[in-house]
Image (tube, rainbow, N blue to C red; front, top):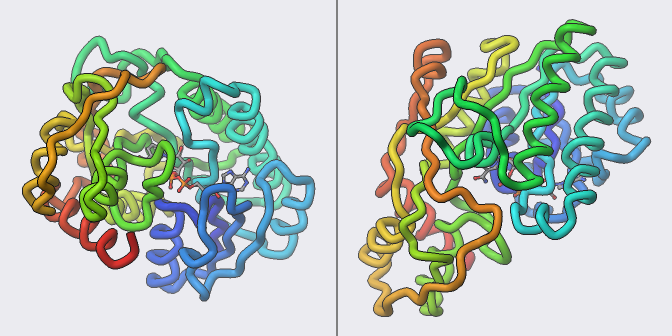
Length: 306
Ligand SMILES: NC(=O)c1ccc[n+]([C@@H]2O[C@H](COP(=O)([O-])OP(=O)(O)OC[C@H]3O[C@@H](n4cnc5c(N)ncnc54)[C@H](O)[C@@H]3O)[C@@H](O)[C@H]2O)c1
């Protein structure tokens, strides 16, 4: 199948591209390299260095005629979304709408959307959160990611554009960017491998649902022709605290120091983990990589290229 992956130079998108190419699909990547890396783009993919908000996106669709769009490009930083909600909305909402318009005009069959279970529910009133939990994002990033879910509903209703929405938990693994606000596992891995001081934001009692990137990729593959019009939480339903994560990784790396605790992040949910019963039932997906196994692979990747 012809697949267009946005954000295909990023952490999760680049693994999705590898899997698609591995399965024999014809893949085009759109990425502006704002956080993605050229070296992560599979050489067998056709690469378009382009902002998803650009008017030139239309030409990519005309040339590539994708049957499936897999949308991973986004402004992904919660703190940046608080500091500049207009930029966040511009990339995440207007950029996604630009894609949807191109998809509609060029007869795309299926749109797979990387949403966020960590930010659309807000502070949970029950745990683990299932897909029917109230949607009350507590940061602009959560609002912008959720807005696109609503647009997808409209495009299916109005134009028959099929979609599957995947609400990700905390995804971790090789290629995650540890600089700035990247995922906590990547940050800890780099700091521990390099013997730097590890800083935990807040008490460390925050709990998250950590899923290894290859499991997330598998769900994207299943969504190619299934789960039409559905939204799925990709979670294991169990929370792991940041302090527990630190302890596991400290043991694996032999890191010698204790963590320093900094101020908590604004807009951050205290505890969130996702009920994955629906995706297990309907797509037969459940995480296959245990946390210890995934963390080991992540740490090794940072030893190779810190
Ligand atoms: N990492 C997680 O734990 C997590 C959790 C929930 C949801 N998500 C979602 O998954 C997707 C991928 O996240 P990631 O962690 O791989 O982040 P990432 O920053 O590694 O990847 C995002 C990619 O999008 C590109 N990009 C950003 N703005 C762009 C624009 N305007 N035009 C074109 N390309 C642009 C970046 O260069 C980068 O390659 C995002 O949509 C994010 O909201 C990630």
